[in-house]
Length: 247
Image (tube, rainbow, N blue to C red; front, top):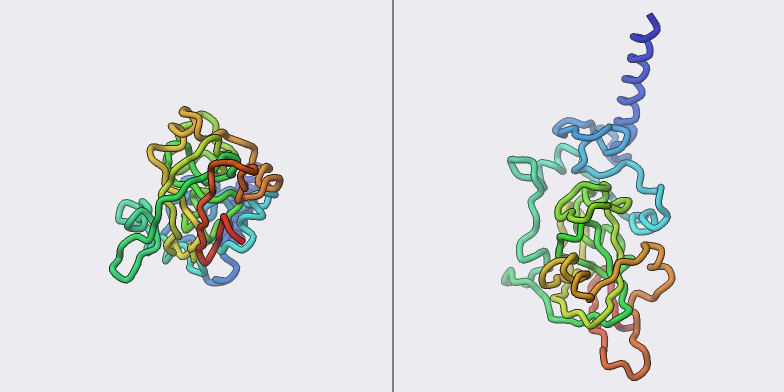
């Protein structure tokens, strides 16, 4: 006779945890319109597209998400309706996610990253987008799902680090297409993104990048100024949400 009682208590606990994980700024939100594929105590509404409930278990991730508002004030159903297609997949921005000019053309430039520069990404090594290490999450205009360990696009490595957060050091001059990030996914964006040829895995294989521990972002300046007389001169990039290479 104790087993049914236990099941009831566990069910109520799960429902309470699920409700408590909803955005505090939207008191009338519920999980309508979501598609549970994870435990409700791990991802918001049990839907991995909405990201992990707790990002404070890592001091590094906590610092990068301190000013991040997961759904930008929308309830899950409205956010998913706005940012996913009929199959439930995310709709990504046009023009490779760069900010657009008045004619809807991407605002971008060729840039060089010098040896010693730290860059990062929330995602697998099959992807081609990176950013200056330590850039706030909301300036990246990526969905909450990128924070779910072991899920998301471009996961090629056997091991996924916590929150899919990877940090790399540039080992030799790396030429990239750089620009400001367009607002998307109910996020302000306007940080900096680097688009490389090939993907991160290729860059590692050919000696352009070396993976480092996330804690390295606190020890090395993000601009990674080259040593005196170094030939490589880092590009100066200034976006409303972030800047590198200049004071």
